[in-house]
Image (tube, rainbow over all chains, first blue to last red):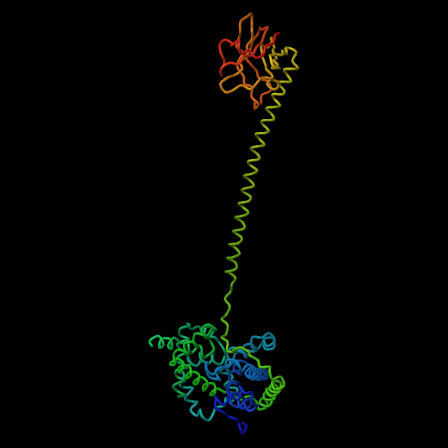
Length: 183
Length: 271
């Protein structure tokens, strides 16, 4: 199903090309990041056509406001995933979206989405099954709420009925586990 | 270095990387990262780990999205080429989610109560002042009322004196146009003097005028009176006398004398 020739550049090359408004940068950007970004968007917005609209809006916004990105302040993906998450949440909270989706349970769908869709596992992430076991369920629940669902840690604390301090600790532990796992 | 370690362990860096910080916190973290390379490395590693986590959880969008999105971006690119100067300088879009607004109702309710209390106090104060003024006016009016009714009484008395045929009206006269009027009723043995129509110089504090009746060449003391501008009395009743043929007024030391000082005779009148 995947396209044969996905364009891939190093992050520095991509940033430079985007800054120079090169056409190849647009394709590389899409090929390199669309599925990761869509992973976040589609966990917040269940409705596929709407999620796809938000993906398009995300790329347009990345492209149009690229001058606002600075490599000193962090990685490109961190900047982009924030845009994707914020646009998704804006859409979720917008009036006409709410009107069209009154009956949809938009809260707890992280697990549902993973069951429904074929999550794409990259070849370089062979040990993905280990990853699932690396994170304790309570760490994964909080990390996914904040990272994929766009909850603030305060909202996550409310939602799960867990003290703020515990939320912070678990987030930190989860990320430490991820670092151990990936490095 | 201990501070940096504590800062790293505080959990703020994780929230920063997850996009869950306020703009102020965001600036603070960025400033710390600039100052301490350790923090920068820490952030970089977290970002990498999360990026890989996102890749591990990636969802491939449907195939036709690629063309659709690339076309919209390339159209955008063409626009950029046409309008070369139109470089949008949109500010950093990585913005922390705004904290949930806590309700301000009680704050506003409290402010409103305080304002209402202040207004009420001012109003109360004003009403109190008005009441005080009204009270004062009432006292003044009462005094005036008493004064008027007194005056009316005196005037009635005076009228009575003039109407009563028993009274004889006698004019006492002296040099330099001095003079006064006296009414005497031999029947009622009453002597009244007219204080208003009196033409006498004002006496000082140490002297008073004294009225005498002369009965069979003997002088009878009928009392003292003052001539002053402020005197409100219209008719003053003096001591009684049943028989008299002459009345006279002398200026005597305050309180009066036993015998008149004849050299200080002011006015005299005969019946």
